[in-house]
Image (tube, rainbow, N blue to C red):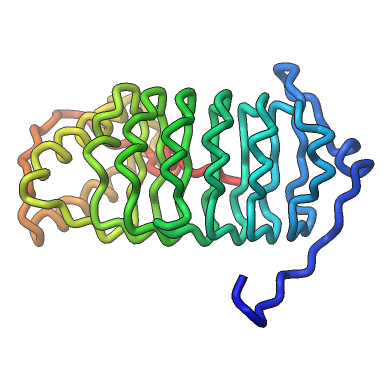
Length: 255
């Protein structure tokens, strides 16, 4: 922390409060829910509860994730969205059972994304949306189990090919990034993005009227943009197919 910069004052969480915040999920897992508690510093007393399988610290004013987060070896879900986190600790790579990691809406930059993230071999969902990341480590491509990746609202100018080649990738959200495709990667990236986009093509008859109207409006807007910017790769036309409601398909969790 910079000299003279005061840490935000937050609510102090005792072990008793933390124990009372444990909930049992519908599938029988123990979830420690400390969201919206005004927490500025993650209290070390939580180590007494390090056997929980889900930890929700979202919507607080947390600036730092402690190194001892690695002690939560049973964690399957770690939700840190909507805080003031600037850097993730290298020790986060030790959470070998982690399936879902959400650090969207924070203050992460490229320096705040550790290379050790590539050690999370079982990770299925990764949300980095709403941060200030301009470069991603190519080692994220080592996360072969990833199915959903949120990179929306960052400063990315390109997406590493290693991410686009993830074998199980189904959802990739790169909206509102200043992405500039390099010439040598154009075909490769467009093919991968098209592969993901094609998963969401549905028949018009399966959509309700409001959704059809919305999809047609979005398609019309896309066509206008294509007339302005020369397309990198021509895509085949699909008769009677439209893109479903994009809002419903956003990778970020809606409250």
